[in-house]
Each structure stands twice: as structure tokens, then as C-alpha cells.
Length: 382
View 1 (cartoon, rainbow, N blue to C red):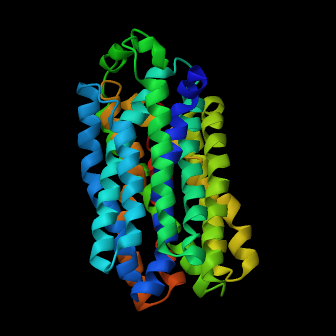
View 2: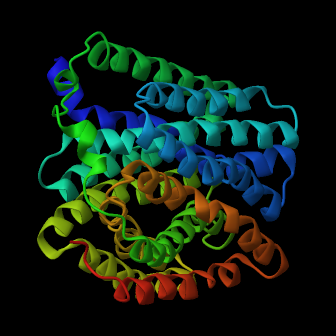
């Protein structure tokens, strides 16, 4: 049993951590209804969650390169989920912002060390392995909104379920990953501690990759926030069903994330990233400009492929470009790759307040073009 948990531990813990991240976007209609927020204020909740993570994750990734800090993993996802649960006690908009920020601290602790664990454990087919890890996160984003939708039926107290999930995760981690001084027990090779010392850092290529990371992050964050809002305001769907629409999107993403990881081992990492952007651009046009249920759900599958298939390949590219600082690279690709877009989201929300949701979502088109063009400027790592 321990061996199985060790093998699948990284994606399981990634799933648990991203329960919290995914649920926050699904709770936006709940916050709007209960606190009378506008779109800018709603997007600012995501901003607070991501701003601290965006600053902290590269720093914590550097710490993970220098020292082994495996306890970042259980502490990280526990902080994330307990903060989401505490939203049940929030009596004001300001308190929600603080709890959102604390949840972001948890995510910043979790991601770099968890990604390094995957890197240390995997000796071949790294794209597939990172794909499985990324699937865990996508599954968490899918299940988070599904669980969060319980607040529309049972009220805010239902969110304490997230704390229970965190405690289960801690028990799994303690059972499988502690109690032995032999690194091989957790699936690592004895030479793995030296793996990040080998190779060279290609900072020029990583700098170019950052624009691809930023593009995907903005697409991911903005869609995560505005899929339920678009479903309610343009498609005229029910608020409770908007969480299910987001869950459907993230559920597709879980499958397509794994597909992207497997595809990258066959096609190459950059070709997979380019393919994702090429498919995303026409599908998002349908999503924005066909304002009915068929356009909404019909465009969702190719749009999800465009966003999620890049996740694993981008992470591996970052680790290969910065072979000597894989933890720092993971803090950028896995950390900023999720959180950076949240820094932009309030401005998209402000556009939605001034004009409308569809006009605001048109900003995704030049962002997707930037990611596509920059991906063609990159070269496959050696």
C-alpha cells in the first residue's frame, strides 16, 4: 500500500491542494450574491490569492533547490484548504480577501517542492510523469467547484469539508512519506539529490518561455473566473449550475492535461505547446461570439485542450532550460503558471463592469497570440 501511495502521491496531493484553488473561482457567484460585489471586486478575490503566490513561489522554489523541505507539501495543502473552509466564518468582503491571500500562501508552499518530488522520482518519460502530476491539479480544479457548489444548498458551513480533505491528505503523507531515512523509500534514486547540480541553465530560453507561461496563466485564470459568470449573464443559466459548468471544464482539463503530457513524449514539448495555442484561438472565438448553450459547451473541449495540454510540457521545458535550478523553474512554471493570470483578472473584470463580459473576454485573443508567437521563437532543450 505504501508503495502505491508513494507512486501516486504527488498527483494525489496536487489534487488535494487544488481543491482549494478551483473552489475559489466557483464561489465567486456566492460572494456576489451574499456581499453585493461587482466584477472588479470579485476578480480581486482571485488577485489576493495569486499575488502572494506569484511573489513567494519562485523564492520558495529556490529554497527547495538549496534544501530538502518535504514538509512544505502537507503544510502547503493544509493551509490552502483550511483558509477556504474559514470563508464560512467571513463576515465581510475584507475578511474574504485576507483568507484568499492565506490560501495563496499555502499554494506557494506546495508547488515547488511537489514538482521537485516528481523530478527526483522519474528517470524516463518525464513528460508523462509530469502529465500525471498536472492531472492531479486539474482534477482538483474540477472537483473543487463541484464540492464548493454545496454552499448553494447547505450554506457556507459546508466549506468545512475542505478541512476534512486536508486532514486525510496529511494522514496519507505521514503514512507513506515519513518514518525512514532511506531516500529510496520514497521512490527517489540515491543520485537524485545531485540531479539539479547537473547540466547548465539556459536563462535566455527560459526568459522567452516566461511569455508562454504568462499567456497560458492569463488564459487559465480569466476563463476560470468568467466561465460561471458568462454562463449566468449571457447564457442565462442558474447560479448553482454555473459551478457544474466550471467542473465540466476542469474535468475535461484533467483528461486533456494527461493527454498533453503523453503527447509531449511523442511530438516534443514545444510542438505540444504550439498545437495547444493553435487550437485555442479559433475555439475561444466561438466561445465568445456564439452566445448560446451550443457555442458555450461546443467550444469548451477544444478551448480546454488549448489551455490544459500545455501544462505538463511547459513545466518540463522550464526544468530542462534551468537544469541546475529545477525547483526555481517549477516555482515559475507551476506557481506563476497558475497564479500570474490572477494578477490580470481584476482588470478584465473592470472591463466587464464598463462594457460587458463578452467584450472583456476578447482580451484573451491577443494573449493567446502572444503565447503562440513566443513558442515559435523557442528551441527544444538539449
